[in-house]
Image (cartoon, rainbow, N blue to C red):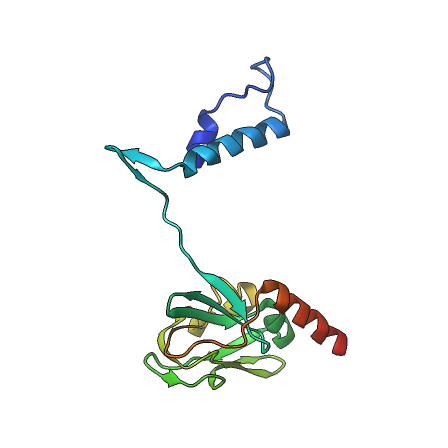
Length: 179
């Protein structure tokens, strides 16, 4: 939608219509199109704001990331972990319905260099596994926080000891200095 708005806008940054818009003018037009796209829609007297997904990404000291939405969470390994592990060649994922305790091994990742264990951040039940990884385990390397997610879980306990992005970056830096 916002792209259509962008192309409908006429550059007003200069008065010569045969010249292409300058980069600053293009950015101004794009910003205007985005503002138009995110305004609440008015339909029959009602305003309906765009849907907003509320989730947060946290990290563990053992280099797992967890994206939570309510009592559900998606689990994977961080970019730091995948680079330390090397090219992943096999993912041993749990069965859907498996119940795990916090800090218990939820799955293992085999790479050319080593075998890495991924731990459950809290008591949970596996509700979905990333089936793409059975055919393409290297997704863990190429897209660790998007397509390379490992499992989706439903929590029965609260994840503890989770780090935000800044704290995790500081942890990784401190760990890198130790090596």
